[in-house]
Length: 209
Image (cartoon, rainbow, N blue to C red; front, side, top):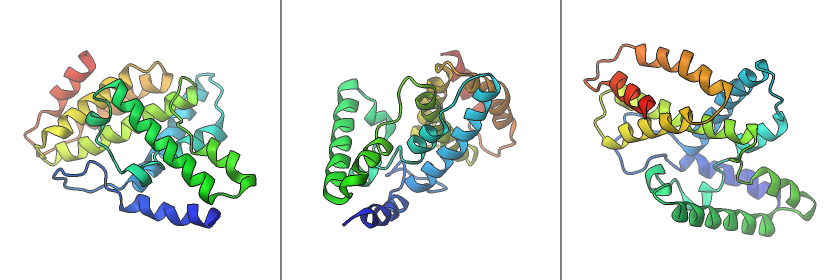
């Protein structure tokens, strides 16, 4: 019992593999994904600050580092399934939040419960920090799918993941999104690849939607 239980539970995130059931050249754990999201987010936030936007850095680090903690209880549900309908997404979120709340009630000392509720909450919202989390989360989907497509992985799910993540990113109104689309994404697409998959075409189609 106690915070030790929380710390010990973090090991489980290392054993949850993203995009289960599909052939992948490289496996990615939820734990590794969360670490990368923090790295993307802090650079995206720096770009926002350079454009005069005020960032709540404590909030940003809290929501990005813990945004997938609930997957300890429900596993990694594929994005196309999770977002197939608003109703299903809401139900999944309610189950996840309920199990997090139960975990906090059962394991976290009373004087830390409010802190853990704040840190483990759903961080994606209309605040600049919440939007940065959304962009960073989708960026990791872009990079994971891109790496598979580069290597010639013909699993359709990675094309869908890559395209849908780009569409989501480009529709978020942030300066860091403009920077990503204008400076980072072109460098990705320019990378040499032995794959027969036309990544440039898929990218152009996604950005045209």
